Image 1 (cartoon, rainbow, N blue to C red):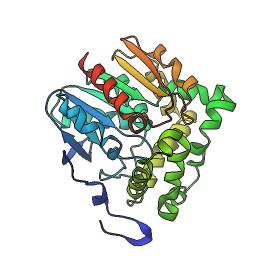
Image 2: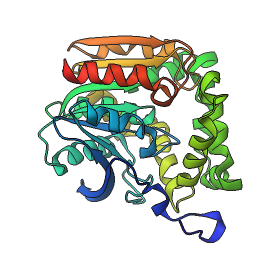
Image 3: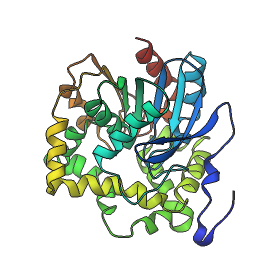
Image 4: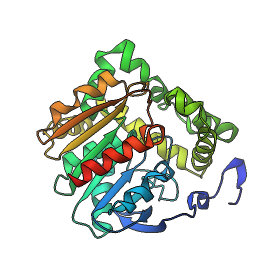
Length: 310
């Protein structure tokens, strides 16, 4: 890893070796860094904020060992993927998922998304139903449930969304990367369940997330998705997005949510099933915060495999 000016790091810091292969795949006009292992039906893993593909480093080999082609991706703007100045709207991010499935040579995939990646998963399944065979969502309400709750629940979801409101400030990415991206660790601590935050694995995980956020332009790109989500409320393409998302999902959907999630409140997420006409299951995870994939890895792995095989 090479240090750069201003405390930035080179994107090679996310190319960690392990029981997987690193590749770069062209999709939707951009180049994406993917990490894959195993063969069989594809399970595409989408990380959240403020993470990168490493969010799935424990889950990925286990999914592969169970007979699947497991693929974790650095989303647009994160890790070693391209960081274009635009394309962080819901339409483009969903098209990225569709393009990745095709670019990886598959006709469809089970899509697993956590946090912001879960919101993208909901959208991809809605806009590209033929490509998303099954959907697993962690710590992410349906986008329309989240949008409604921010306005209808001022002491609850609106208050929980306060950090994302700060993301609207110009040049806030410099706050995010200050002091070796200390703010990233603060968010992980605030949103994670106490059992994980106080555990032995937290510090190393936070260190990796802080490092990846210091890759040039990564912080700016990570915030752009949140900026679009708020700004689009007052714009025509945001109104169009809401109308398109009202179409019920025909993808079988499993929703897992931490009972201690203070970023996306359980009461916000719980009504998401109304947008799914296919088989749908909801499971609340005790003693888990906003990051079930690392806080309750074994439970989440078992549920992913159950859903992907069923």
